[in-house]
Image (cartoon, rainbow, N blue to C red; front, side, top):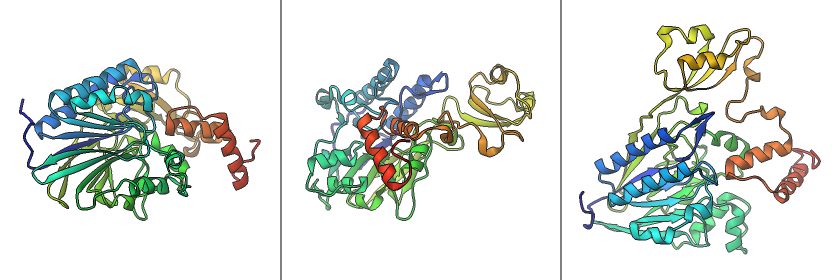
Length: 397
Protein backbone atom coordinates (compact mmCIF):
# COMPACT_ATOMS: atom_id res chain seq x y z
CA UNK A 1 0.00 0.00 0.00
CA UNK A 2 1.38 3.37 -1.02
CA UNK A 3 2.36 5.61 1.88
CA UNK A 4 0.58 8.95 2.17
CA UNK A 5 3.08 10.54 4.54
CA UNK A 6 4.37 12.76 1.74
CA UNK A 7 2.79 16.02 0.66
CA UNK A 8 0.95 15.30 -2.59
CA UNK A 9 1.43 17.44 -5.68
CA UNK A 10 -2.28 18.06 -6.27
CA UNK A 11 -5.10 17.31 -3.89
CA UNK A 12 -7.65 14.79 -5.16
CA UNK A 13 -11.05 14.43 -3.55
CA UNK A 14 -14.00 12.10 -4.11
CA UNK A 15 -17.40 13.68 -3.53
CA UNK A 16 -20.36 11.41 -2.73
CA UNK A 17 -23.67 12.02 -0.99
CA UNK A 18 -27.11 10.62 -0.22
CA UNK A 19 -25.95 7.06 0.39
CA UNK A 20 -29.23 6.33 2.21
CA UNK A 21 -27.78 3.15 3.68
CA UNK A 22 -30.55 0.81 4.79
CA UNK A 23 -32.95 1.90 2.07
CA UNK A 24 -35.48 -0.52 0.59
CA UNK A 25 -37.45 -0.58 -2.64
CA UNK A 26 -40.85 -1.91 -1.70
CA UNK A 27 -40.15 -5.27 -0.02
CA UNK A 28 -36.58 -5.46 -1.32
CA UNK A 29 -33.60 -4.55 0.86
CA UNK A 30 -30.87 -2.67 -1.02
CA UNK A 31 -28.01 -3.54 1.36
CA UNK A 32 -26.29 -5.85 -1.15
CA UNK A 33 -26.74 -3.30 -3.93
CA UNK A 34 -25.31 -0.57 -1.70
CA UNK A 35 -22.30 -2.73 -0.79
CA UNK A 36 -21.73 -3.33 -4.51
CA UNK A 37 -21.71 0.41 -5.28
CA UNK A 38 -19.52 1.31 -2.27
CA UNK A 39 -16.97 -1.23 -3.50
CA UNK A 40 -16.82 0.66 -6.80
CA UNK A 41 -16.16 3.91 -4.96
CA UNK A 42 -13.40 2.24 -2.93
CA UNK A 43 -11.85 0.84 -6.12
CA UNK A 44 -11.89 4.30 -7.70
CA UNK A 45 -10.34 5.82 -4.56
CA UNK A 46 -7.39 3.47 -4.95
CA UNK A 47 -7.14 3.74 -8.73
CA UNK A 48 -7.11 7.55 -8.73
CA UNK A 49 -4.97 7.79 -5.56
CA UNK A 50 -7.36 10.22 -3.91
CA UNK A 51 -6.44 11.97 -0.69
CA UNK A 52 -9.91 12.41 0.82
CA UNK A 53 -13.56 11.44 0.46
CA UNK A 54 -16.33 13.94 1.20
CA UNK A 55 -19.72 12.47 2.17
CA UNK A 56 -22.26 15.28 1.88
CA UNK A 57 -25.05 14.01 4.10
CA UNK A 58 -27.85 11.45 4.26
CA UNK A 59 -25.47 8.67 5.19
CA UNK A 60 -28.43 6.66 6.44
CA UNK A 61 -31.98 6.47 5.15
CA UNK A 62 -33.56 7.07 8.55
CA UNK A 63 -32.74 8.60 11.88
CA UNK A 64 -32.57 5.17 13.54
CA UNK A 65 -30.58 3.11 11.03
CA UNK A 66 -30.74 -0.66 10.86
CA UNK A 67 -27.88 -2.83 12.13
CA UNK A 68 -27.11 -3.80 8.53
CA UNK A 69 -26.82 -0.14 7.51
CA UNK A 70 -24.47 0.67 10.41
CA UNK A 71 -22.28 -2.35 9.62
CA UNK A 72 -22.08 -1.32 5.96
CA UNK A 73 -21.00 2.22 6.81
CA UNK A 74 -18.46 0.83 9.28
CA UNK A 75 -17.04 -1.34 6.48
CA UNK A 76 -16.78 1.64 4.12
CA UNK A 77 -15.04 4.06 6.47
CA UNK A 78 -12.75 1.33 7.81
CA UNK A 79 -11.55 0.47 4.30
CA UNK A 80 -10.88 4.15 3.58
CA UNK A 81 -8.87 4.45 6.79
CA UNK A 82 -6.86 1.34 5.89
CA UNK A 83 -6.09 2.94 2.52
CA UNK A 84 -4.80 6.07 4.25
CA UNK A 85 -7.60 8.20 2.84
CA UNK A 86 -9.15 10.89 5.03
CA UNK A 87 -12.94 10.93 5.21
CA UNK A 88 -15.10 13.98 5.91
CA UNK A 89 -18.76 13.39 6.79
CA UNK A 90 -21.71 15.71 7.43
CA UNK A 91 -25.25 14.85 8.46
CA UNK A 92 -28.22 15.24 6.15
CA UNK A 93 -31.89 15.70 6.92
CA UNK A 94 -32.35 11.90 7.11
CA UNK A 95 -29.57 11.41 9.66
CA UNK A 96 -29.66 11.55 13.45
CA UNK A 97 -27.09 14.08 14.67
CA UNK A 98 -26.39 12.13 17.86
CA UNK A 99 -26.05 8.72 16.25
CA UNK A 100 -23.89 9.89 13.36
CA UNK A 101 -21.52 11.83 15.62
CA UNK A 102 -20.96 8.94 18.05
CA UNK A 103 -17.21 8.42 18.54
CA UNK A 104 -16.30 11.34 16.26
CA UNK A 105 -13.56 12.69 18.55
CA UNK A 106 -11.93 9.26 18.74
CA UNK A 107 -12.23 8.67 14.98
CA UNK A 108 -10.20 11.77 14.10
CA UNK A 109 -7.03 9.87 14.99
CA UNK A 110 -7.85 7.53 12.09
CA UNK A 111 -8.57 10.35 9.64
CA UNK A 112 -12.36 10.31 9.94
CA UNK A 113 -13.91 13.74 10.54
CA UNK A 114 -17.62 13.96 11.29
CA UNK A 115 -19.66 17.13 11.68
CA UNK A 116 -23.23 16.16 12.47
CA UNK A 117 -24.52 19.31 14.18
CA UNK A 118 -23.91 23.02 13.67
CA UNK A 119 -22.60 24.48 16.94
CA UNK A 120 -22.30 28.14 15.97
CA UNK A 121 -18.97 27.72 14.19
CA UNK A 122 -18.38 26.48 10.65
CA UNK A 123 -16.35 23.28 11.17
CA UNK A 124 -12.90 23.41 9.53
CA UNK A 125 -10.03 20.99 8.98
CA UNK A 126 -6.81 21.59 7.04
CA UNK A 127 -4.99 19.51 4.47
CA UNK A 128 -1.86 20.32 2.56
CA UNK A 129 -0.38 19.67 -0.86
CA UNK A 130 2.47 21.13 -2.91
CA UNK A 131 0.54 24.40 -3.32
CA UNK A 132 0.02 24.89 0.40
CA UNK A 133 -2.98 24.75 2.73
CA UNK A 134 -6.50 23.68 1.81
CA UNK A 135 -9.34 24.50 4.18
CA UNK A 136 -12.11 21.87 4.26
CA UNK A 137 -15.31 23.22 5.78
CA UNK A 138 -18.22 21.04 6.86
CA UNK A 139 -21.76 22.38 7.16
CA UNK A 140 -24.33 19.76 8.20
CA UNK A 141 -28.00 20.19 7.32
CA UNK A 142 -29.27 23.26 9.17
CA UNK A 143 -32.57 25.04 9.54
CA UNK A 144 -32.89 28.79 10.01
CA UNK A 145 -34.09 28.27 13.58
CA UNK A 146 -30.86 26.44 14.48
CA UNK A 147 -28.69 29.28 13.19
CA UNK A 148 -30.92 31.88 14.89
CA UNK A 149 -30.07 30.27 18.23
CA UNK A 150 -26.42 31.32 17.82
CA UNK A 151 -27.08 34.69 16.18
CA UNK A 152 -30.22 36.03 17.87
CA UNK A 153 -29.53 39.55 16.66
CA UNK A 154 -29.70 38.48 13.00
CA UNK A 155 -32.91 38.58 10.97
CA UNK A 156 -33.06 34.99 9.77
CA UNK A 157 -36.39 34.34 8.09
CA UNK A 158 -35.08 32.00 5.37
CA UNK A 159 -32.57 29.22 4.85
CA UNK A 160 -30.65 31.47 2.45
CA UNK A 161 -30.10 34.14 5.10
CA UNK A 162 -29.17 31.49 7.65
CA UNK A 163 -26.46 29.91 5.49
CA UNK A 164 -25.10 33.31 4.45
CA UNK A 165 -24.87 34.22 8.13
CA UNK A 166 -22.97 31.03 8.93
CA UNK A 167 -20.45 31.74 6.16
CA UNK A 168 -20.12 35.44 6.98
CA UNK A 169 -19.18 34.62 10.57
CA UNK A 170 -16.69 31.90 9.54
CA UNK A 171 -13.86 34.28 8.65
CA UNK A 172 -13.16 32.67 5.26
CA UNK A 173 -9.70 33.49 3.88
CA UNK A 174 -10.55 34.36 0.27
CA UNK A 175 -6.91 34.04 -0.79
CA UNK A 176 -6.69 30.44 0.41
CA UNK A 177 -8.14 27.37 -1.29
CA UNK A 178 -11.43 26.52 0.36
CA UNK A 179 -13.68 23.48 -0.02
CA UNK A 180 -17.13 23.14 1.53
CA UNK A 181 -19.46 20.17 2.04
CA UNK A 182 -23.11 21.12 2.64
CA UNK A 183 -26.51 19.45 2.57
CA UNK A 184 -29.11 21.98 1.43
CA UNK A 185 -31.38 22.92 -1.48
CA UNK A 186 -29.11 25.17 -3.56
CA UNK A 187 -30.22 26.92 -6.75
CA UNK A 188 -28.27 28.73 -9.43
CA UNK A 189 -29.20 32.15 -10.74
CA UNK A 190 -32.65 31.83 -12.28
CA UNK A 191 -32.64 28.02 -12.16
CA UNK A 192 -33.46 25.31 -9.65
CA UNK A 193 -31.64 21.97 -9.49
CA UNK A 194 -33.39 19.06 -11.16
CA UNK A 195 -34.95 17.01 -8.34
CA UNK A 196 -34.87 13.26 -8.25
CA UNK A 197 -35.94 10.51 -5.92
CA UNK A 198 -37.68 10.94 -2.60
CA UNK A 199 -36.65 14.59 -2.45
CA UNK A 200 -38.84 15.45 -5.49
CA UNK A 201 -42.07 15.86 -3.55
CA UNK A 202 -40.33 17.92 -0.89
CA UNK A 203 -38.77 20.26 -3.43
CA UNK A 204 -42.07 20.80 -5.22
CA UNK A 205 -43.85 21.65 -1.96
CA UNK A 206 -41.11 23.79 -0.44
CA UNK A 207 -41.07 26.45 -3.15
CA UNK A 208 -38.73 29.26 -2.16
CA UNK A 209 -38.67 28.50 1.57
CA UNK A 210 -35.47 26.43 1.58
CA UNK A 211 -33.86 27.71 -1.61
CA UNK A 212 -30.30 28.97 -1.16
CA UNK A 213 -28.55 31.01 -3.83
CA UNK A 214 -25.40 29.37 -5.17
CA UNK A 215 -23.64 32.75 -5.09
CA UNK A 216 -23.38 32.55 -1.31
CA UNK A 217 -20.60 29.98 -1.91
CA UNK A 218 -18.45 32.27 -4.08
CA UNK A 219 -15.58 32.14 -1.56
CA UNK A 220 -15.20 28.38 -2.03
CA UNK A 221 -13.15 26.75 -4.77
CA UNK A 222 -15.34 23.65 -4.68
CA UNK A 223 -18.70 23.00 -3.01
CA UNK A 224 -19.70 19.36 -2.41
CA UNK A 225 -23.49 19.34 -2.14
CA UNK A 226 -25.91 16.70 -0.96
CA UNK A 227 -29.75 16.56 -0.79
CA UNK A 228 -30.73 16.31 -4.48
CA UNK A 229 -30.45 12.82 -5.96
CA UNK A 230 -29.71 13.82 -9.57
CA UNK A 231 -25.99 14.54 -10.19
CA UNK A 232 -25.56 18.05 -11.61
CA UNK A 233 -23.74 21.34 -11.33
CA UNK A 234 -25.45 24.37 -9.81
CA UNK A 235 -24.48 27.67 -11.39
CA UNK A 236 -20.80 26.90 -11.94
CA UNK A 237 -18.92 23.66 -12.50
CA UNK A 238 -17.37 23.78 -9.04
CA UNK A 239 -20.70 23.80 -7.17
CA UNK A 240 -22.13 20.32 -7.60
CA UNK A 241 -24.59 17.75 -6.37
CA UNK A 242 -22.98 14.30 -6.49
CA UNK A 243 -26.46 12.76 -6.44
CA UNK A 244 -27.34 9.45 -4.85
CA UNK A 245 -25.10 6.54 -5.96
CA UNK A 246 -28.14 4.33 -6.64
CA UNK A 247 -31.59 4.87 -8.12
CA UNK A 248 -33.95 5.05 -5.19
CA UNK A 249 -37.23 5.86 -6.97
CA UNK A 250 -39.08 5.53 -10.25
CA UNK A 251 -38.33 9.16 -11.11
CA UNK A 252 -34.64 8.21 -11.32
CA UNK A 253 -35.14 5.33 -13.78
CA UNK A 254 -33.56 7.26 -16.66
CA UNK A 255 -30.82 8.87 -14.57
CA UNK A 256 -27.17 7.90 -15.01
CA UNK A 257 -25.37 7.79 -11.68
CA UNK A 258 -21.83 9.04 -11.14
CA UNK A 259 -19.60 10.78 -8.62
CA UNK A 260 -17.06 13.59 -9.06
CA UNK A 261 -13.34 13.29 -8.56
CA UNK A 262 -12.07 16.80 -7.85
CA UNK A 263 -8.45 17.81 -8.42
CA UNK A 264 -7.23 21.01 -6.80
CA UNK A 265 -4.19 22.75 -8.22
CA UNK A 266 -3.07 26.21 -7.20
CA UNK A 267 -5.72 28.80 -6.29
CA UNK A 268 -8.32 29.04 -9.04
CA UNK A 269 -7.39 25.74 -10.69
CA UNK A 270 -10.04 23.08 -10.12
CA UNK A 271 -10.89 20.18 -12.42
CA UNK A 272 -13.84 17.82 -12.08
CA UNK A 273 -14.00 14.32 -13.58
CA UNK A 274 -17.24 12.34 -13.37
CA UNK A 275 -16.87 8.60 -12.77
CA UNK A 276 -19.83 6.50 -13.84
CA UNK A 277 -21.38 4.06 -11.36
CA UNK A 278 -22.79 0.72 -12.53
CA UNK A 279 -25.46 -0.84 -10.28
CA UNK A 280 -25.71 -4.49 -9.37
CA UNK A 281 -29.31 -4.29 -10.50
CA UNK A 282 -30.77 -1.43 -12.52
CA UNK A 283 -34.17 0.15 -11.85
CA UNK A 284 -36.47 0.16 -14.88
CA UNK A 285 -40.00 1.19 -15.80
CA UNK A 286 -41.93 -1.18 -18.09
CA UNK A 287 -45.21 -0.25 -19.74
CA UNK A 288 -47.60 -2.35 -21.79
CA UNK A 289 -50.09 -5.19 -21.60
CA UNK A 290 -49.04 -7.94 -19.23
CA UNK A 291 -48.85 -10.59 -21.93
CA UNK A 292 -46.52 -8.31 -23.92
CA UNK A 293 -44.19 -7.68 -20.98
CA UNK A 294 -43.64 -11.38 -20.34
CA UNK A 295 -42.98 -12.38 -23.94
CA UNK A 296 -39.61 -14.07 -24.36
CA UNK A 297 -38.23 -11.38 -26.65
CA UNK A 298 -38.90 -8.72 -23.98
CA UNK A 299 -37.28 -10.62 -21.11
CA UNK A 300 -33.97 -8.77 -20.71
CA UNK A 301 -32.13 -7.95 -17.49
CA UNK A 302 -34.78 -9.82 -15.55
CA UNK A 303 -33.00 -9.31 -12.20
CA UNK A 304 -33.49 -5.52 -12.37
CA UNK A 305 -35.91 -3.73 -10.08
CA UNK A 306 -39.11 -3.25 -12.04
CA UNK A 307 -41.92 -0.74 -11.82
CA UNK A 308 -44.61 -1.77 -14.29
CA UNK A 309 -47.51 0.17 -15.74
CA UNK A 310 -50.07 -2.20 -17.21
CA UNK A 311 -52.25 -0.96 -20.05
CA UNK A 312 -54.68 -3.89 -19.89
CA UNK A 313 -58.25 -2.57 -19.93
CA UNK A 314 -59.29 -4.89 -17.10
CA UNK A 315 -57.34 -5.64 -13.89
CA UNK A 316 -55.27 -8.83 -14.11
CA UNK A 317 -55.66 -11.25 -11.23
CA UNK A 318 -52.39 -11.52 -9.25
CA UNK A 319 -50.52 -9.38 -11.78
CA UNK A 320 -47.61 -8.84 -9.40
CA UNK A 321 -47.27 -12.57 -8.79
CA UNK A 322 -47.26 -13.28 -12.54
CA UNK A 323 -44.69 -10.57 -13.25
CA UNK A 324 -42.44 -11.83 -10.46
CA UNK A 325 -42.24 -15.23 -12.15
CA UNK A 326 -40.35 -13.44 -14.94
CA UNK A 327 -39.02 -10.37 -13.10
CA UNK A 328 -38.47 -11.57 -9.50
CA UNK A 329 -37.62 -8.05 -8.31
CA UNK A 330 -40.85 -6.40 -9.40
CA UNK A 331 -41.41 -3.59 -6.92
CA UNK A 332 -44.85 -2.31 -7.84
CA UNK A 333 -47.43 -2.08 -10.62
CA UNK A 334 -50.17 0.35 -11.57
CA UNK A 335 -52.60 0.71 -14.47
CA UNK A 336 -52.89 3.27 -17.22
CA UNK A 337 -55.90 2.64 -19.44
CA UNK A 338 -59.15 4.24 -20.53
CA UNK A 339 -60.66 3.61 -17.09
CA UNK A 340 -57.90 5.17 -15.00
CA UNK A 341 -56.64 8.03 -17.14
CA UNK A 342 -53.10 9.34 -16.85
CA UNK A 343 -54.09 11.97 -14.29
CA UNK A 344 -55.50 9.51 -11.77
CA UNK A 345 -52.67 6.98 -11.65
CA UNK A 346 -51.47 5.71 -8.30
CA UNK A 347 -48.72 7.82 -6.76
CA UNK A 348 -45.52 5.78 -7.02
CA UNK A 349 -43.37 7.16 -4.27
CA UNK A 350 -45.73 8.64 -1.72
CA UNK A 351 -48.45 6.01 -1.42
CA UNK A 352 -51.88 7.69 -1.41
CA UNK A 353 -52.56 10.50 -3.86
CA UNK A 354 -51.89 13.91 -2.29
CA UNK A 355 -55.45 14.85 -3.22
CA UNK A 356 -56.67 12.25 -0.71
CA UNK A 357 -54.58 13.55 2.17
CA UNK A 358 -55.68 16.06 4.76
CA UNK A 359 -53.70 19.21 5.46
CA UNK A 360 -52.10 17.58 8.54
CA UNK A 361 -51.27 14.40 6.60
CA UNK A 362 -49.59 16.39 3.83
CA UNK A 363 -47.47 18.28 6.35
CA UNK A 364 -46.62 15.09 8.23
CA UNK A 365 -45.52 13.36 5.00
CA UNK A 366 -43.41 16.34 3.97
CA UNK A 367 -41.79 16.58 7.41
CA UNK A 368 -40.85 12.89 7.41
CA UNK A 369 -39.33 13.21 3.93
CA UNK A 370 -37.27 16.24 4.88
CA UNK A 371 -36.21 15.53 8.44
CA UNK A 372 -36.75 11.80 8.98
CA UNK A 373 -38.86 12.37 12.12
CA UNK A 374 -42.49 13.00 13.00
CA UNK A 375 -43.70 16.58 13.21
CA UNK A 376 -44.53 17.72 16.74
CA UNK A 377 -47.94 19.05 17.72
CA UNK A 378 -46.41 22.45 18.51
CA UNK A 379 -44.88 22.69 15.04
CA UNK A 380 -48.12 21.51 13.46
CA UNK A 381 -50.06 24.23 15.29
CA UNK A 382 -47.67 26.93 14.06
CA UNK A 383 -48.07 25.71 10.49
CA UNK A 384 -51.87 25.56 10.82
CA UNK A 385 -51.93 29.19 11.86
CA UNK A 386 -49.55 30.23 9.10
CA UNK A 387 -51.61 28.39 6.50
CA UNK A 388 -54.78 29.97 7.80
CA UNK A 389 -53.30 33.44 7.58
CA UNK A 390 -52.10 32.75 4.04
CA UNK A 391 -55.47 31.39 3.01
CA UNK A 392 -53.97 28.04 2.03
CA UNK A 393 -55.93 26.02 4.59
CA UNK A 394 -58.12 26.74 7.53
CA UNK A 395 -56.71 26.34 11.01
CA UNK A 396 -59.27 23.61 11.68
CA UNK A 397 -58.54 21.65 8.51
